Image (tube, rainbow, N blue to C red):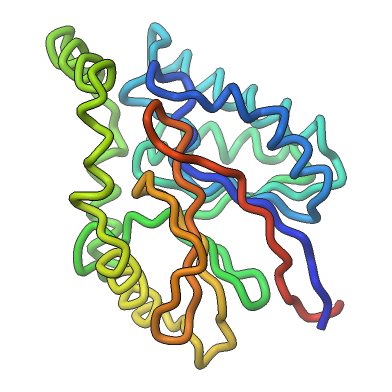
Length: 242
């Protein structure tokens, strides 16, 4: 067995007003340079609430961002995990095409297992998820419809006033979240019995540090959203030697 350094972030929600991800791009680059692999854990882009003029413009900006990131750190392999906000069908078609240009890039629909650690977006915590229910949940986000001017104004007002801040604590209690994710992992054949020790996830916009549940340790770096806490996670993953 050998130790492999891995970085992880989720929920950057790039191209939206509420995202402060630009403040962490340089630090992400540093983490990538220190890592053999870097996981982009879903909702990296947000096609519904993008401030760009069209969905097509956001997709092009997202693909360019990925190409620039991977080119700037060629010794690190980047893994992109889809979330719900970036599970846009038009984006997926273009992502499949552009992935071939990036030799140090892979993308995954639902999760990635590296050694004793598993990475997923975390929307399996929304309810008692089965793999089939998660597919259905994601399908709601596949065809982006821009919000109305009134809806967007209300959304911006909620964030400007900080009314979103208590939501992760009210609706995403740590024990409930990790229990839901644990149940989902059992259904896809992953758990302590398979050598799994650590689970890294996003989605809930809430920091979770070394939370122990049923033989697994759960980690979440939060989200770079106004009023929320965030940090880039770096860890050593135990993998088999090639």
